[in-house]
Image (cartoon, rainbow, N blue to C red; front, side):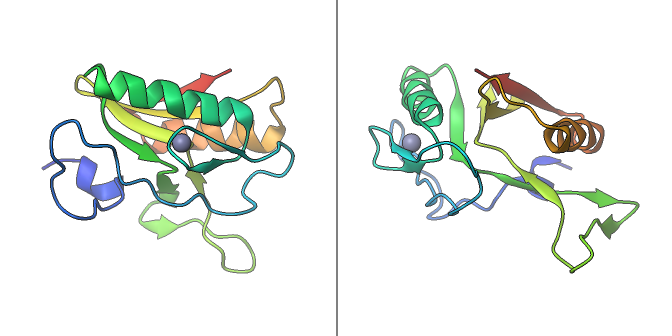
Length: 141
Ligand SMILES: [Zn+2]
């Protein structure tokens, strides 16, 4: 059985026509606390200029056929031994990447990072890699 169905967000509207742009979700507000929000060429509001620039690049790569199924802010939940990890208040713990796509058969998620990496990120990344070993997490400058 495909692992993909377990964690990939549902695609809306069925199959896209070849070459059509991805139906991106609106970015969740307030998920990044420092960088200024910025728009890309596809009218998404991104958390930073670097992320908007990367979005433009990824769209070009998708159009060129180098990647496919480009997604914006895919959500991964942390489930350990069948139990959803939660904060004290009940809020689920997980990881929302900036982008996801397939490069050949490889499932890739990207996090656009500046120089700043805090302990929370280091821990989140380690848990993500343990729970989703089939997904390659890339940190993009
Ligand atoms: Zn964008």
